[in-house]
Length: 116
Image (cartoon, rainbow, N blue to C red; front, side, top):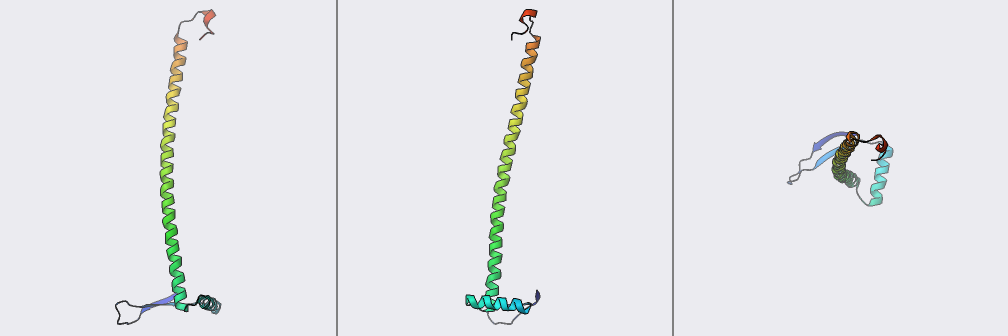
């Protein structure tokens, strides 16, 4: 949990910001051990770990956005194709109906009724 932020007064152009992080004793020991294993100070370890996590989340979100955009484009193309197929089916139904109507209207003798 972040308790508060304060700004130190450095004379450099870049100001250092201090963030206080409250942890349990077990969490502190875990962080200290990990930092020691990696050869970093505790502050440097926390900073690099957090920044790496943020950067990986951002890149994952960018990839997800790209995938979603391509999926939306594919879905749109498929919907257009489906609409075209629906129109073609409707046209075929109309042609079939017209052909059947012409067959019924054609004069036939009783012995030629079964012939097309």
